[in-house]
Amino acid sequence: MADSIQLLPDHIANQIAAGEVIQRPASAVKELLENAVDAGASEIRLIVNDAGKSLIHVVDNGKGMSETDARLCFERHATSKIRQIEDLFHINTMGFRGEALASVAAVSQVELRTRRHSDEMGTYIEVENSEVLRQEPCASSPGTSIAMKNLFFNVPARRNFLKSNAAEMRHIIDEFIRVSMAFPQLFFSLSHNGQQVFHLEKGSLKQRIVQILGNSYNAKLVSVHEQTDYLNIQGFVGKPDAAKKTRGDQYLFVNNRFIRSAYLNHALMQAYHDLIPADSFPMYVLFIDLNPEHIDVNVHPTKQEIKFEDEKIVYAFVQAAVKHALAQFSITPTLEFDIDAGIQQSDAVSKPFTAAQQSAASNSDLFQTFSRANQAHFIEKGNSSTVSGTDQIPDGGLQNWKDFFEPALRSSTDNSSTEAQYDRSPGFDWEQPRKKWQLLEHGDLLQIQQQYIIAPSLPGFLLVNQQLAHERILYERYAAALVGKPMATQRSLFPVTLDLSPTDATLMTELLGDMGLLGYLIEPFGQNSFVVQGTPADVLQGNEKSSIEKLLDQYKHFSSDVKFSRRERLIRSLATQHAIRPGSQLSQREMRQLVSDLLSCAQPNITATGTATFIEFNHEYLARLFGN
Image (cartoon, rainbow, N blue to C red; front, side, top):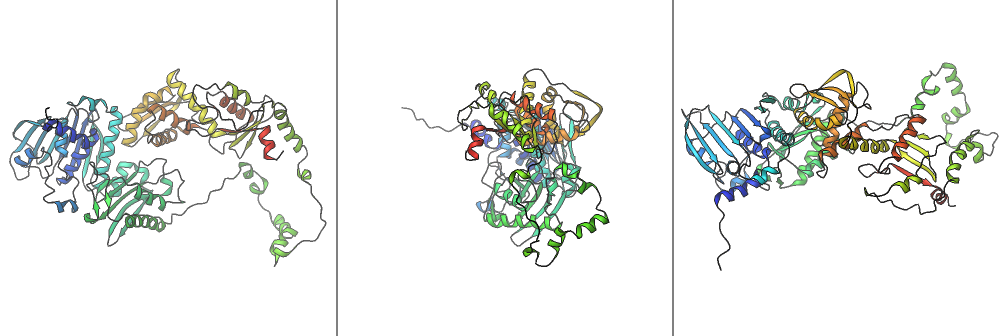
């Protein structure tokens, strides 16, 4: 029999190795930008076409390469950073594995122009499928220009797995931001299809943060600066009111290298404990500098995961530094109370407390009881009376509640177990439970705490969460609009201009088509700007900008779940954003319409995320509660 083990050809081995490093256009962008930083460049320009699928071009004014180095840099494991094994534990550069350019050359067509400052002529090299096609001297500016064209042209299966241009562009912007955020002292620019997306002048870290994340952060940053013998921590964290529903604006760097660390992120979250809601995430841009001997950066191909020699001490330092910064700026939790709107209208609150009223109050027995010494043991003598439970009910109160419950209890003929669980599958016939949940035609609905609705039904009553119920209604309405008749658009009398960050602008471009079906009429208006010409009817005039900004934030929150399609994430975001908020006072007509619309839904008892929209209280369950 013939031998079955054989060596792979070089071009196949290179493509397999490239799969670890170059997973999408953004991966190549990261590697090329980091090489430009390591070359000592002060200006780095990134040009991409078709979200990097047809062109990724990086131009820098770094030290450049000699003719020999230019040829050798495309070989696997070729690097200027490592000479011996000990060098792995003293790495202060971005790249060091020697696989970046080899991986790029294995899956694209590459053109390299480079010249050292001391040379008169530069070097031009053309590589395709890991094979050098041409090498010759050329006229070139000092530094390096490398262009990779037609990514994955020789691996069609990999190219087919790439996402839409808008989605891939968002990944490229993310990588560009991570590198440019780490080096604010360098100039960076990014252009896509001939349009400039970023133009970042050299400056301080705070200036770079504001340039990238937007002017809204200018007054929301708290400086962090701690120096110890083991490590130094510096950067900025956001004030609690800058917290968002997504993790998007969180950047952690170790020795200027962007990393992901759930462990250190937990330290940050603990520093904000009780300062922000549990479902919100703080903004931070933090740099941790420590001896390279105390970390191992060679644990992941993309180098975004590292190992610390002592994770616990880093955790403690990070948490303490952020807490100290927040305390220094007197940022403390504020107490919030839910106050019934009716209380605000009462005479005791709205009318002044006159001098006569103050005198009468101070002379009252109640006031004297609480103001004299040993008041805890003082009992005012007087006529005592026995108050029965029924004496406390206002006139007509008992009868009103009896009228409210009795028709429902009399109509209850269902003797089935109250613990029956209804199948939530789409094919389930909801007609049977709907008959149980049918709303009574007569009898008022009752709103509690401006958040819940008590609705009389045939077997008893339903306790409805008005926000979750509205979410379910809107979700089904939007889902139907995407596959059937588009929703009506309410034209704005005065169109609103929306200025977004480059990341959000790219996301908005991706969503424009589907948002049009859902009633939004939004048109591009120059770089990173859009004009809102119309919105769905349930968006109040004047709230268009806030509504769309919150929608994008909510969409990014749902984007972390890969099992959802783009449309599913969009309609969930819209339903969550446009639903009635707790604290909204509803009229009888509005409450009845809301509950009726809910019970008409295809799946009325749960939201799209599986949360119950109402709780059913029938006669048997109520009797069991009271031991009858």
